[in-house]
Image 1: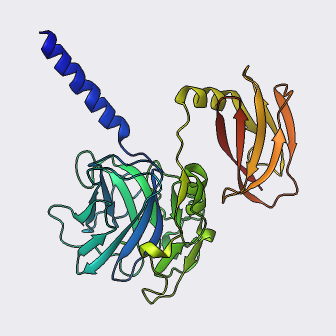
Image 2: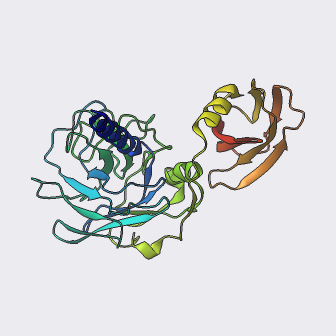
Length: 335
């Protein structure tokens, strides 16, 4: 009986560990995308990917609550036995009709079982998701997405994606659980699309900073309607240097919950509040590429401090608060 209980406990803990490792929104980010054959795309890992992890890639659009009823298919990526470290660039290239190659050592890629084609011709989106019940599940766990098409009749100026994605096969609403500019990107907000695109910003910084920088259209280079003008080969990208440090969960949640920036968005003036007991050291202001713009001492901090950043340009910034033992980063928008 004791042996049986021990085996059950080991099995339960093992399954819990595996489930805890499953990817969530923002754990990868697309950094390259070619939509007029041969198809190609590239993504960077922003966390360690466990061995055997399966991620589906599809050009089928999302209505906001369900998949669009089209015949578009899936590619299925499986991480190798040793897993894939955080900060790895993975490139997928169509070498011949519906046959794909992948960066050496980063796993395998192939059409999902029963699927016969994969084509992003003439502009499309590509969505990465986990499907615990297989391809195109009713409730997918979306991880990342890039939208490379612009449909004026279905365009949503708020999300810069589409209104429900029902116009045609190149349409899609923002996948549920993702946020445009945070863990997905629409490359052509309100303008006619082109077919080849590559992120050309920095790949050095924290995973959080890079995730937002990558999902900002202004940090991408676009080509022409001739495939291959902008390529997404492994050597096209700088060598990544990603700080993938995971903060202690308890420290992170306490500092995060007890600190606040308001108003946010603001005009460059805001108040930083902290109701905890731990001594804070400093507040750092970083731009979207992770460059430190300003450091403000929090020595002798007494719960509240007025911050003036009115000299900064409009846009998104990162505010990092450091204590003696940990840190937390918050996004702030200057309007």
